[in-house]
Every structure is written in C-alpha cells, then in structure tokens.
Length: 392
Image (tube, rainbow, N blue to C red; front, top):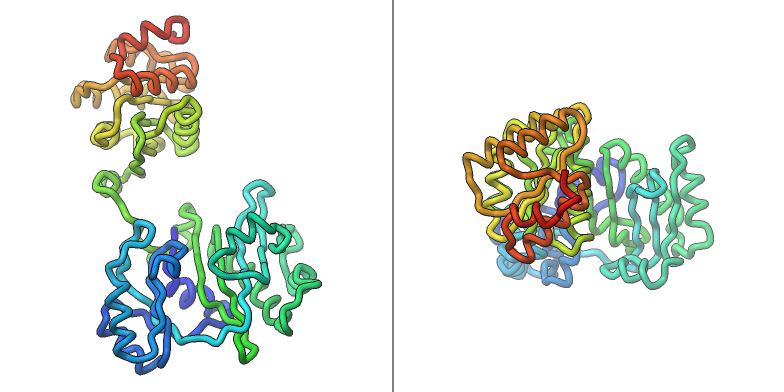
C-alpha cells in the first residue's frame, strides 16, 4: 500500500511528533486560491504515489493567491509516472539551510529493519547512494535491542549537522518506532530540512505499508492511494483476483504468489516475457474460468504456462477447474503444464484426457516450451511432440 504525501505527514509523521510544515490539501484551483489566505507564500505540490515530482513539473512555488490558483490548475490533471494528479498539497514555503535524508526500510537480505541517513538529501539521493555509498549511513537494527537515542547518536557520530544533531536523532528514533507500529515497509523523508531558524522539518514523505498487514492497520489502510489499473486489472479486482497486466507474450497461471513470481522469473531466464501476474491459490482456484479469461483477454498473449505445486492445496482440484474452463472458452493458443504435489497423478490424468496435453516433468521445460511457442507460433501438439523425453 502506497500513501500520498499529505496522508503520510498528517496521519503518520505529525502524530509521531515529527515536525511538518503547515499545509492544506486541495482538490481544485479554487480551493488552492482560498488556501493561500491561510498559508501565504507556498509550494503547490502534486499528490501522486511516486517520486521525481519536481523534475516532472509537479511542484511549483506560488507567491500570490492568483498564482496558487494558476499553479494548481497547471498541475491538476498532469500525468506523473503514469499517475494522474487528482489533488495538490499547498505547503508553506520554508527557508532551507541544509537538506538531509532519512528513511526506515526492511533489509530483506539481513531480515531486519534498516535505518538510513545522509547529509546529502534532495532529489538525487539515488545517485548519491550509487556513486558515493559512504555518504549514506546505514544502521541495521538488532530486534532485541531496538533503536534508541543512544543508537541514533552513534549512527550520526562524526557528521556535521550544523547543531541539529539532537533534533535529527530524535526524528530517527520516532521514525523507527512508528515504522514498526504501522507495519511500514518504507518511511522516507527527503528532504529532512534544517531551516534557517534552526528547526528540522520533514518537507516530504514517502510511505509504503505491508499489504498483508492491512487487517491490523484498517484505519490507515483506508487512506491508501489508488493505483492506476488497466481494464483487465479492474476486472480481476472485481472478481477477487490479484491480476497484474504486463507487456509480455507468455501468459502465466500458477498457484501461490511465490510460485507465480518464480514462473515469471524462469520465463525471463528462458528468453521470454511474462504477460501477467495471476495466482489462483487458496479459494481462488474456484475462479478458474474468470482467471483464465483474464489471462487470455490480454491481446499480447501467444502461449500459456500453467504451473501447479500442491501441498495443502490439491493440484487435481485446480487442474479440474482449468480443464473445465479451457473447454468452455476454447482458446486457440498453445498451453503447457507443470504439475507436482498433492493430487498430482489425478491432475495429470485430467489434463491428459481432457485436453490431450502431456504435463512436463520439469517446470523449466514447460516454461521453455511456452517461450518457444510464443516466439514461433507453433501449435501445442507440435511442441509436446518436439519436447520428446522432457514430457511425461
């Protein structure tokens, strides 16, 4: 779940005691004009769940009420990185002395929270991290000891923060505590600005929460930003299916998000391009026809790989759903199966007798056949015969 800047500041940073500028969230140019009376000279900022807004022209200053109205009119309706701008945040202008960078994220390799800080904040922090990694301080948090003021001071030791060391340390500690409380995958403040009057203020915030924790964060999850969706993705959501449309030509139908991602990776490894993410694990196997229709409705799909691996889920039940759906929809593209796990023998028999297809012993062989078929346009029967000993 991604969140817009105004939500992250008002709902997360401010309640945690992290200073933020005065601001008004506006949906029309008229509202922006009225907000100027409260704020005075301000920045008009596009509200989209993506970075690089300034470089895209989505952040502009306004020094009069009429300018605020005009800037909002210019920004509203823009497309920034595929996201339409539906609202703007008017924020009081700040006299910036220095720009820092601070973030809390999950270190997936070390499997623990990671605190980041740099004295070189701003729009090009990615370049700083890539070209001068020493300019970015990293602290991997021991979950037993946590991250307190002493740890924050040690992390900042030796840095010239122009007298703002205690303020910055306090903000880092508050960020860490907040990230755990709200199940955040990322809280990033860039810039964390030292103002001319000596205050340290969060001038921006990027916030991402773990989707699987939505049941614990029901109040906050309801404020998540809407992600742009294709017509097929909206259809999938309406059917309770997590479907992501891609620009490849090999369709994917698998059970479980991990197996689906693995199948997509193998498609890429074999020289192909996956056309979608769609998994039918759990109760989604009862929606085989809707799922298959989604995959086949993507105009770029030239072949399909079906990859089932059952533990608690029975592969024969999933296979029966796909075979029945295939017969009803009668698509004219090659399909290749890899089936392993609980109910495997019955699943293989269903595919063999129902579709005349022979599932492959190895997932890699099924994927490679699907990639080859997408490239050549060969009929599935020809592919099955050509694979010889690779099939059952």
